[in-house]
Length: 208
Image 1 (tube, rainbow, N blue to C red):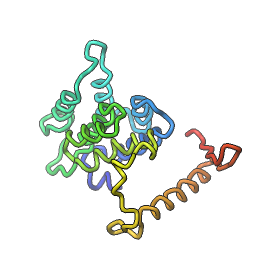
Image 2 (cartoon, rainbow, N blue to C red):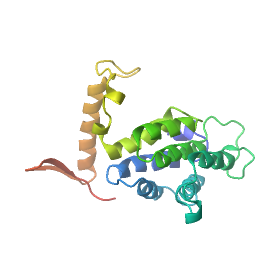
Image 3 (cartoon, one colour):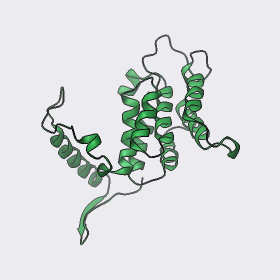
Image 4 (cartoon, rainbow, N blue to C red):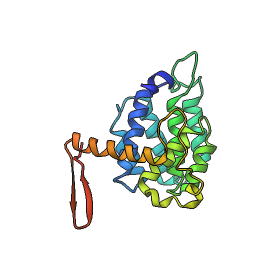
């Protein structure tokens, strides 16, 4: 709902797409395949889907264009999806947040970050437009692929687990616990199951 109220453009599709990327990232190590899988979650004719296909093409491209820098991809995204004069921008008198442009910034950081934590963070941040949410999503999706162990003391050493989040009843460990509780409930509610064997606990998650 926030995507519709706050984000200009295909806010709902943006939410579906990014959520699908997070889901796919748990099961797929190839970043391009994660994007392609998430693309199936939104209407192919939507402007957001067109943006995703564009960024993928700029990243993969024909052999002669392989190696396009993220700087050039950023410029192409801004010109096509960030310029109010562009046919792909849409019509609006007041633009709070253009989800199509910001979605491109997430993908540029994620794809051109080469699977590296610091590079992903730097590229997504340098892309601008919304330099808190965009890097958080690019790195969050990558984090689902790499796992928590990939984030060493450099990134989490100063994390205060005892501090309560603003406007929230949760501290860090409380948030982790409730997230796990909800994940377990969702797995079962969606037709999966939780079991245990000699290797430990496992989740059976049905393909949807």
